Image 1 (cartoon, one colour):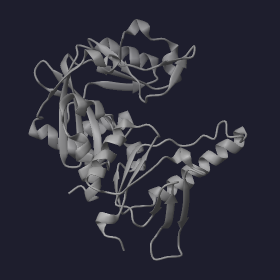
Image 2 (tube, helix red, strand yellow):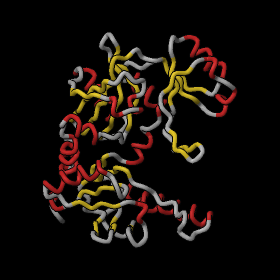
Image 3 (cartoon, rainbow, N blue to C red):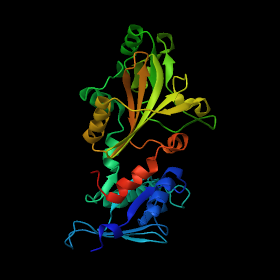
Image 4 (tube, helix red, strand yellow):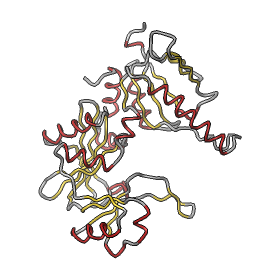
Length: 323
């Protein structure tokens, strides 16, 4: 059996991913073998062959790319970064056949990968998907002692009106980022102020998230990687700092010890190894929970602050364990 040092790190991501490239560069510096693949390459660009019930290991076989063959029993760790699943649109398959093939890839290739319970996952896709539900995040944050702004998730028009009327200022936030186009132009759902007068019957179509606005002086993005914490204060004067990156200024901060422990407890509670937290700091210096992005972006923060985030991921993936 190959030693731990000889086992590869698997990196699952799309073809162009600067963040993954940074981590792979760090792994290369450590002479750690890497197998990079994307589920959408299934076919000539990616082959899986897995066996169950015929060998000592619960699952055995290989995943092959044009340049690498990787043994399913010899995986050191998996960086599940930003993989793209195939849709088979434009492949020559009809609508029903395309949907059928896409489902087989998700449950065949995906199921095989998810069966690998020994390597360290950063993060396991099933745990990551479960952790991405904002209502569950809000409840978990409060359960662990974090300060959570008053929030309502509802499609009841009268409940929404009463909530907004009961608070001085309220914002609307999407429950899940979704790719949307208007007249062929991509649009993004930012956090936006909302008033009672703006609500109408369309609220009843789907649940909406309304939240009391924090009188913040800054935002803080916190990246947890295993046992390490990177916290960056973001000053902008914007309600949603993602609107204009050119308006942002950054400074590295140390979190209060109790808050740091609560964030690590959150990551452990939802079964993750890494996550990006968004917090707000009010005028009294209190930190308020906003949300967790289980696979949040961080590469631009390393460039802006010099924090060695990619190295922290590489260290974690190299060890194959969080300790």
